[in-house]
Length: 74
Figure 1 (cartoon, helix red, strand yellow):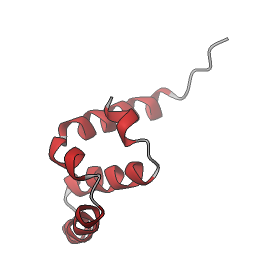
Figure 2 (tube, helix red, strand yellow):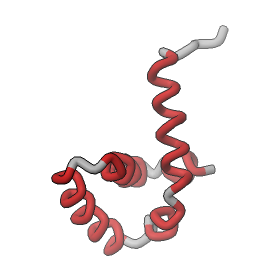
Figure 3 (spheres, helix red, strand yellow):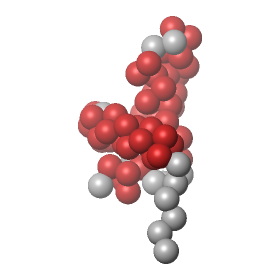
Figure 4 (cartoon, helix red, strand yellow):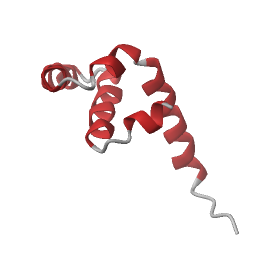
């Protein structure tokens, strides 16, 4: 028996993973707390502009806090 999640959600997740993989610079700095805090402030600024990239960065931080980032990138 194989559970099939909603296709729409699955597709969105894959798209997100691709965006995460493209952010290699962020991958290196995820270990640094200072870097994360700095990124958070940058993101809050970017989100004010409504830039699409900020969404990906925000997700990156969220995933990082869940310790799932490494899995997602691998």
